[in-house]
Image 1 (cartoon, rainbow, N blue to C red):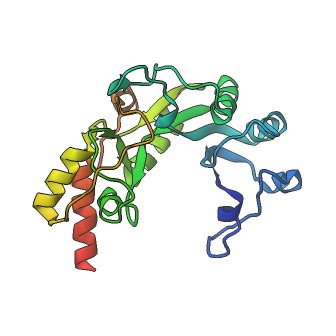
Image 2: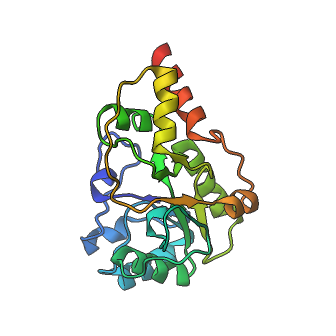
Amino acid sequence: MALESSKATRRQARPQCLEFDYDRKESWKNLPPSETCFWTFPAQTQNLKDFSELIFSRAKTIVIVSSTGFFLTTEKDEVVNEESKLDTSQDRVQAEEFLRERGAIVVHAAGIYGPNRSPLDWLVTGRVGWSENFLNLIHVDDLVSVLIQASRLSGKSERWIASDGQPKRWSELILEWQKKYGIGEIKEKTGRRPSKRVDPSRTLSTLQIKLKYPSVYEGVDAMRGSSLSN
């Protein structure tokens, strides 16, 4: 069972679609019993106690998709890992920690990329610009592998990181892709978040993850090749 946003769960195109809206308690009864629940929408403290009672009674294993953006840093380009401190002032972090303490597994995902979601396109369209900040990424296929392995091999209340462990500076990516793909000049753009480097080595080792895309270079190359062949 995958818990998504209310809009996603009501898309008629999805097979075995069911109606679920976190803000509408009457829809909770539609959630079926399940061996594993993958929680993919942002957890909220509102209604959390009541909802957690329900979901823990209906799923043996609960895996929550979080973000590496919640790890606190005190210096530029700091390395963070599964043991790093979290920004507990944020409502979502408080909710996730409440669930983890009850036995849920939390997977902190780095920036997710994949089909129709390419860092190369983010540069070309001006969404991001030249910067010396580090970018930490995970291809969606590898994220799925981490989630599945966490559900199979993790103990309760564990914390894991989904990242390829190969942080790249935006400046490095731009220079490589200008040379390889001929993208034009990229203007400087100040990032809103402090730069950090994510180290998922314990996760990759313990959960026996073999990455399909060891870095963003392989991932973007694969997407470019796929788009050119279509």
